[in-house]
Image (cartoon, rainbow, N blue to C red; front, top):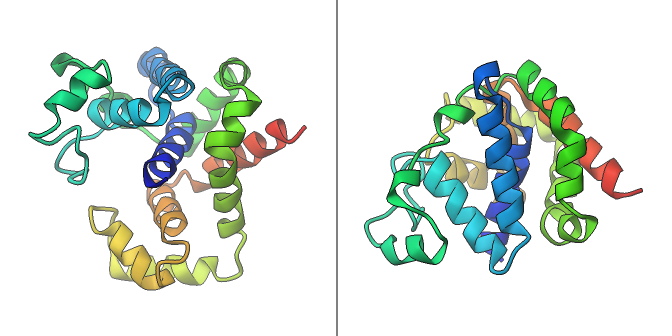
Length: 202
């Protein structure tokens, strides 16, 4: 269940991420690949591993098994090659709200077609609705101020800080929005989440 939650948040983030114009194709390719893997057999594991191996590093994601020295067998299981390691990191480096909105609007119709309602309900629905609900919480601003006071920027201890503030109730959502707030794309991401919810609720 924990892996499904991590994948869901990863998909939401990647769907919400934009980049410079010359890297738009690579960004869309990553999103399409994640959607394809998430909707196939053993999907949540393979998609999660693909995202971690190609778009993060061991330094900023020390809990990732696929990035560790013990992950070689998992690499084969998920159809990854050593040459895939880190190839999408630069693709996700620019996460400005303006670019996120631009890339989302340019590709949303195609992404909707690739991601059927069945898989949205199974993988993303609960996380999307929980993130929206958390951001509408009357205590949201207060919790965000506490996060900013305890941490100057996101890091490997962000989850622990969010857990301390929320008493581990809503810590994933606080961590997610703290990172979006730090990147100054929280409004753009919130709008996309609302659009996802509206689209799949029709």
